[in-house]
View 1 (cartoon, helix red, strand yellow):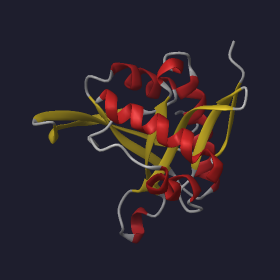
View 2 (cartoon, helix red, strand yellow):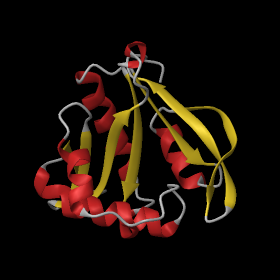
View 3 (cartoon, one colour):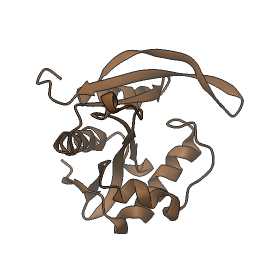
Length: 167
C-alpha cells in the first residue's frame, strides 16, 4: 500500500509540476497542448490563491498534481471550475489519481466551488476509469472537439458535484 500524502501545491513544487505536465504533453494522451511548458509559465497555476492546485507526494517526492482553472467568466459560473490531473509516468496506474482527485475536490469545496468538470480524450480509458472511481460521471461526448497534430479528437465531458453525497 502506497503512503500517499495530498497537500496544496507550493511555489517550490513548480519544477516537479512542470516535469509531470510536460510528460502529459509529450505522451499526447491527456491534453491538446503540444508545446512543452516552463516553470515560469506554470508558477501561476501552482500558486493561485483563487484556483486550488494540489500535489500528491510519496516520501516527500511530488508524483502527481491536480489543478483548477476558470470555467467561464460569467458570474453565474463562479462556483464551477475546470480541472486537470497528471501523474508522473512511473507512478501511473497505482491509485494515486483517485486520492489526488479526492484532495482536489475537498480543496475546491473549501474555496467555494460546487462543481468540477473537465474533458478527457475518449481513448484515455485509464483516466476515465480513475475519474469514475473518484466519483465523476460522464455527461456526454464532444465530437471533433479540436485537432491534435492534424487529427480530430473527441472528448468525454466529466463532472462532479462537490456537495452531492451520492457522488
